[in-house]
Length: 149
Image (tube, rainbow, N blue to C red; front, top):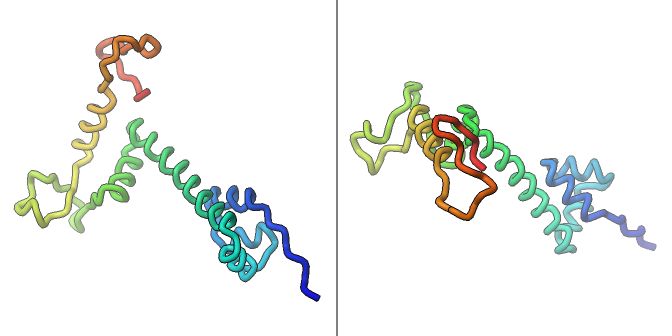
């Protein structure tokens, strides 16, 4: 006689994956073996979809928080974001190199200075779409700074 099938809550799998738990940690939290987990991934499309959507949702939350901190002026968040998403790097010399300083624009990696990043982000902060019907968020008085809406 076969053992009864273990009931696994798919919503719990999604929630645990969203929190960033590894496959082994999810197994431990659910009280199942890695073999059972692997078998369910193969057998049940909903199980695999829950795992994938949970991971994606967790990444989206963290990436969104990082992006908001970068826009708010956090230089560390800006640097991390640009290094991981825009192939920005710092040469071994530790000096930032501007694209205009490169001799060969085609073969040199893109590298921006912190001052250039601040100028770009300041430009984004001061940008206000022209919408005369928008009375909920009036433009700030000149000289005052406000975060992006």
